[in-house]
Image (tube, rainbow, N blue to C red; front, side):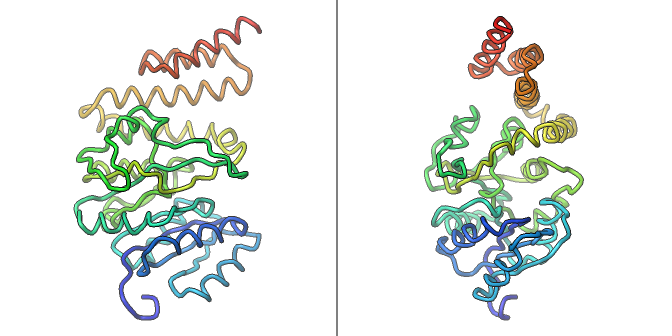
Length: 312
């Protein structure tokens, strides 16, 4: 326990690999949360830049910050390692290149303290480029999340959130707070999933108990150029594996959620085909997604594919 004093209310978990440039901003955003009784565990996962120096200086000036070291084990295993050292009953996640908005954590911790049966909570968030340009909020992009009742800075309960989380992977990891005992009972992050391990854990928790959400954007998410493109094939593979695993559990609750999840994977396949100039394949996947889960956005994408084929 830090300085042998009180048990912290919440343990913040941050995996960091070559994050010397971004990490100070994340640490600063923690200090704006209006909560003092926290533990912040940062896992320096094989960094070769100045991450170690940043963390050494930060932990020297704030006893609540703990630095752990690992050797390139990846975010899922790094988060598992951090939570083994967590002293608080609640776990909050903050990636090194993301930023919390002031007061986010205090509101979320207060909600969990008042609703001890809620295993998972999350908020809306805003996407930004490295230059600071806003790319929009997350929830309004996703039809099911957009349809959730507006709560503002308050939190609304969802008694059965698994179909929602399965249908649309919109939960931002750096917005999430979970119960530590629920995390341990669920088995933690799957380190064998090289992508989407966070989504898979949220599904497992949602199947075990209630979740809650806030429509107030409480986190700024950094979108790096090319990050989606470079990891798309791996992410599609992992998402497809997760859908196959959880479909038998979700289908009896909500068949539409299954169709939406499969359509989302086909849309990702279409986008990957379009990037390589294969408009025929892109159209095929968009049409398949349109049959599974008709939306105006997918229809517009399919029409664009047809136009591209006509001019090719």
